[in-house]
Length: 448
Image (cartoon, rainbow, N blue to C red; front, side, top):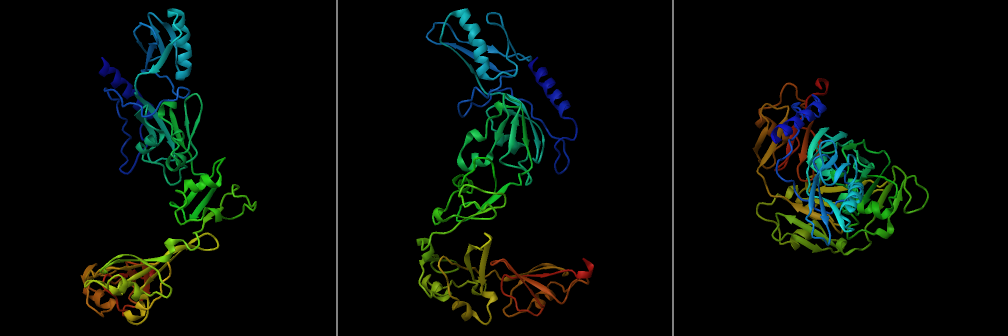
């Protein structure tokens, strides 16, 4: 009998969703899980009785405090009613647990004349939650009442890149609840990510255009949607917090707010956290990769790449010195944009001596890769792939090893990619390439 009731409920749910709801990739229909017949997992935190909606299938436990009376369990029937031979008939449909306590408490006190009576939920149970809006797979999902909105959104494939993480609406309960997943993730505010016992429909709107960018010395530089009540401290926390070397007292607000207030923002503002002047982290250089003793070393004014390599014990035998690269810490330009400086040895004229004399700055990182022994050839060639490296050979040599140009190839210009610095250089086929380089041949412009 119970199996038949569960199957009928699942069929009704499928009929209400209809065909074609929430399709992805291979266009398979959304599968709605049947409720488990085992007891649901326990609640991880105390429930909020003002938000908990009593629904059909719930079991309410009545406990008589300081009394010899045994506890009783009252089941909510499919109509949302309590129908009990002793307690009577009570309509709890769409009532919160607080309201249910008031209704049942009055009846129970009249029956038993005991002031100490408590009414609570016995366990979590599965309910149907409708997910709409900017998620990968909108639809109806069967979840336990102790799950949070964020978990249901994960089941729905997650919020799309157009979706908002701070203006999510959870409705169908006594009040619409605004869900702010940024506060839940970055501030640990679990009330901003409520359990699904509080409603029936989760709607994810498109991302608000009212945003600011938090950049500089924070752990997670990013664009953040503004909501009423956001102040500077909150926005910095929503960017992961200020890093150890950041100066929170010297924050700059770049943009059109014009008010001079640290807690007044307009859409498009950039909140920039500068580094602390002369922070100890600035007075070091990092040397890692194919050196004898990789590590962090004290910075000395006038220090060069050669000095840093020597301080790290020298190069290993299989070091690819020609691909050594200096990475400079990202900086902010006057508009609050990051600039990334990378200085590969392959970009400096002459021999390795030129790179060895390259002067370092505080907080620079020097990376020395190992030799890989091949050059990768790709694009408009007969046989793309990896070919053995030979010192002093040109890109054309490797293209010929790959079977030569295809008829569609641009034979005048090729591109050489440095996989360490991530820099691509446009060159002629006669350019000498280094161990580990990627040579790419593009299609002729008129054929694109």
